[in-house]
Length: 126
Ligand SMILES: Nc1ncnc2c1ncn2[C@@H]1O[C@H](COP(=O)(O)OP(=O)(O)OP(=O)(O)O)[C@@H](O)[C@H]1O
Image 1 (cartoon, rainbow, N blue to C red):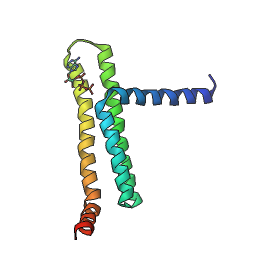
Image 2 (tube, protein in one colour; image 1 turned 180 degrees about the horizontal axis):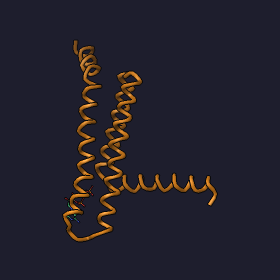
Image 3 (cartoon, rainbow, N blue to C red; image 1 turned 30 degrees about the horizontal axis):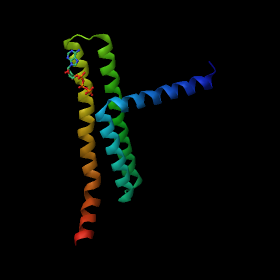
Image 4 (cartoon, helix red, strand yellow; image 1 turned 90 degrees about the vertical axis):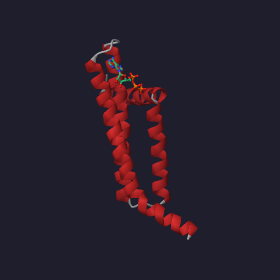
């Protein structure tokens, strides 16, 4: 395969992975929806580029970990249909990684949006 065709195929497979994960993983759909809301809010509140960059990085981290979590779940299910403590550890640790990133994402969101939202409320309701 030519290098360009190989690159195109890899890109297509990656998009297929994202599409398949979106179809099967409700949490991933929720995180993508939350990401769209956060990005829209960051433009609405005219946040400085550095804050938007931090939010984008945080969103990328959560969504990427959600995709890795999906991959680990699939790999574990492929390896063993039986209950095994290591299978549990793999799935729970992967889910824990998503949870840790999501909790810190909420903290980062509060830190960044706190002032503009308070100012917005003051402007609206005096
Ligand atoms: N093969 C297994 N051996 C031991 N424990 C398992 C195994 N498969 C799943 N579990 C336990 O059950 C939990 C739920 O697993 P499941 O495969 O249903 O994924 P999930 O967390 O429901 O993810 P999702 O709903 O996003 O697919 C895991 O977090 C783990 O604690």
